Length: 124
Image (cartoon, rainbow, N blue to C red; front, side):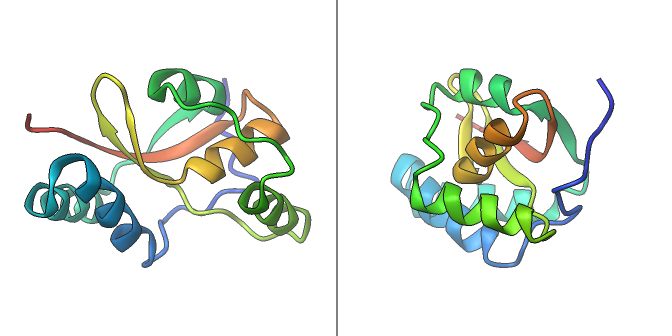
């Protein structure tokens, strides 16, 4: 499968990391969330996975095209704007630290298009 980047940026946006930290703090507490968010900010390698596989690995349901954030992201793509890569934490299940709506948006565009991801490992 070729790497399709037509609606993806190469770098996450600055606000993605605090959002990831906030979400992760609900799962592992503030200190470990800060460590994971910092690791995501420093990770430079992008991995590419199909949106359908990211949803399966995370166990998250596909949000509908009517979801406000998905609809907003679909509008951005229609205008030619690119979406930020998603931030993930390896594990069972895969944690989507930031970018759940973007994964669902990409699925609605084409479930097989590869989504750029920054991924770090859990320590526990």
